[in-house]
Figure 1: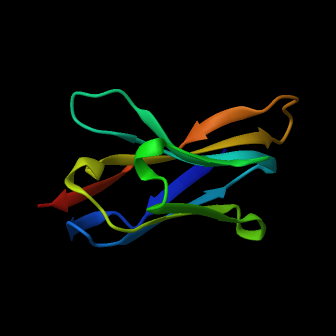
Figure 2: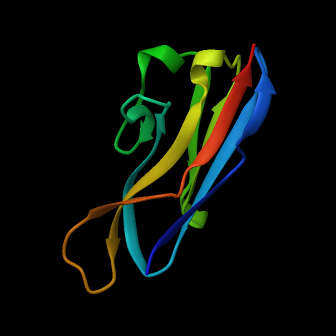
Length: 119
C-alpha cells in the first residue's frame, strides 16, 4: 500500500515563507510526475505546481513558489515565498506512480495540509 505524507503547513503572515514536504512510501516501483494542488473553501482544487518531464506552475504562483524533488527519497517539496492571503488553502501533494503487481500508473494523493496566510 502506498502512502503520501505531507508536512510543513501552518499559519504565516503576508510576505512570509513556508516549505511543504511530501514523502511517498510503500510498494512503489517508480514515480513519474509529482505535484502540488490546493483547494480553498468553496473553490475547486487547482494545480499549483508539477514536476515530471517538465516543471509547470500556476500563473498565480510563478516567481514565488518553487517545486523540487529528491527522487532517492520519493519526496517532493514546495518552497512558498512572498505568501499572500489568497494562497490560503489546503495543499495536497500528488504522485503518478507504478505500484508492485500493477501495469499502469495511478495518481495517489496526500491527506492535505492547511496553509493560512494572515493579512
